[in-house]
Length: 85
Image 1: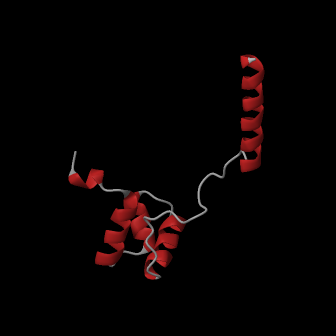
Image 2 (image 1 turned 60 degrees about the vertical axis):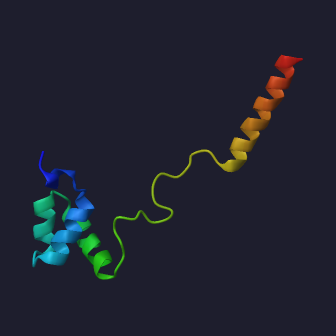
């Protein structure tokens, strides 16, 4: 395994973008990422946004709301009381 294999794609992008004259298209081909991703990362990097940090609110949203969790816990507690009596 070479050292380059252990470096994540976003870090590789940052290095190529900062230290070469490669275009977003060339970087996307070199890293095997979609051109639109490379273009988006270029824009963010040029705006001094760290692309390695996942922005707040990104990712899968919880499927169960806090209210539902409270109702489930209340039912569980009531069921436990009934079973223990």
